[in-house]
Amino acid sequence: MTSATARIGAGPAVRRPRHRRRLVAWLFIAPLAIVNLLVIGGPGLSSLLFSFTDWDGLGQANFVGIDNYVELFQSPNVLAAIWHNLLWTLFFLIVPISMALLGAFLLSRLRRGQVLFRTLYFIPYVLATIVSATVWRQILSPDAGIGAALANLGFDGLAGVNFLGDPSLALGSVAFVNNWQWWGFLLVLFLAAMQGVNPALYEAARLDGANAWREFWHITLPGIRPTLMFLVLMTVIWSFLVFDYVYILTQGGPAGSSDVLATVLYRTAFSEQRAGYASAMAMLLSSISAVVVAGYLILRKKLDWDV
Amino acid sequence: MIRVQTDTLAAPAASRRAARAAARPPRRAGFRPDHRPRRPFSVLILVVLAFYATGPLAVFVFNSLKSPAEISRSPIGLPSEWRWENFATAFEDANMGQGLLNSAIIAVSTALGVCVIASMAAYAMTRLELPGKSAWILYILVSTSVPIQLFLVPLLSWWSTLGLYNTQFGLIVIYWAVYSPFATMLLRSFLLTIPKEYEEAARLDGAGEWRLFTRVMVPMIWPGMLTVALVAGLQAYNEFLLAVTFIQDSQLLPVSLSLYSFQQSYAVDWSLVSAAGLIMAAPVIVVFLLLQRRFIEGYTQGGLAN
Image (cartoon, rainbow over all chains, first blue to last red; front, side, top):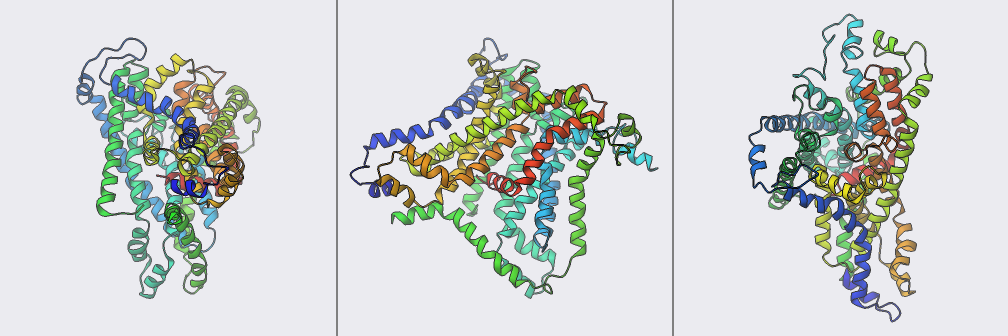
């Protein structure tokens, strides 16, 4: 590519010295490099350093070795949060992905109305977390929500159930709300991938008398495998980073029953002023993402998958 | 030989598009109605899913028009009288005017800045003699997948030191950094599909790189820029974690935080909370419905940019 520019642009009027052309290139990428290093690169690196200190976020930081990491893996709060993140991952690997696959597959076989359905499914995704949390806080509230509405109709099985305030229901309820906003996005991605599958394969399958389930299993799923694998990977990563919904709906409560790593981290850093310890949690979170990404890349290389 | 190299670089996106375009006509022609029986059961499932997606929003709209007493009497159904004044009250009580103005400033500045930063970077990565191109791509890919929590805590102390904490400009700079890597990858894929002949002609005329970039390249990648602006602007408008961490002053709060604090204080008055939520959501829903193809394109490409 470089030689292309050089050779064709070699007219006498335009040939500029090499160092000058490099300088121009650097100037073009400088804005990205500067804001990126200032916001992500620099503070990210100092997180790594602070994770070995007792920094409070403001004052002096003293080196404490790996104490933070030792505490991390002994803290019942952190271990409970990791467990909640794992449950969250499991929920998001199963529920939204199956709903989106089902919806996208049925929609891809629809002759008319695809755009209308796609739009309806996508609307929750463009809403802010705070808006969809507002929608559902009311529907899930014990006094003015779904339970009360059903009780009015004479079915009081859910009456008075405090979905977000009951320790055994809080985490599941938050996941349910997040799924409402999330699955339509997956559906749209799956639908786009399914439209790229060679239609001749379906025709061949139909001539062989395959039913819908076999078409889905033998043609659609293999056809969208790169998209599916990518979204499975992102689901795992995002499930460990989830923050907004938990923070807005339950703040991790009641009694830590819906705490996830990100909310524990936030509290540790900004309420308990233990920024060094919170940095160790940040390193844990980031290494989980890194391991998942690396595993995916290695798998892709080994199995020669194309994305 | 040179051409071949550029072509293979441009190949994934272009060939995918070509394949999709080629795939359409036979698909329509191939399936005559008798091959595709009507599927009432499929349509039923799709309708149920559509109801799941939009039903809660209908409840939300209904409740924003009820009185609190009516909500506790009938939490789900249609309002018996439509109290439009709820919107005026909520707008006033939740300080939504200031919030919407602040959010508009933040979203527009984010969108513009991300467009400038990302298009320049994408240009450098595809057209200029940038040393270590693949290293840059890797760095950008890594920074799209870095969790915000990784840099949040030190960033707060950096921002306090620099005087950027609790300022809208400080928040906007963070959004620039967080949203431009994805935008760069998207615009890069756009630039790779544009043949080099356009700029070569301009180069022979003696145009400088900046002129070439602003006069030739930017007009050609305009659809991509619009997509990037929409996605970045919407994300900035909706964002919560960074806003709640970096803005304290009630005069500077974006609308998401106006709504959040209103919800925390008025947890019982569901009609006003719903009305305030709808005020925040309305601009987004309108823009989405008007430009939904571009939105969905941006998100589907953005989501798979890696």
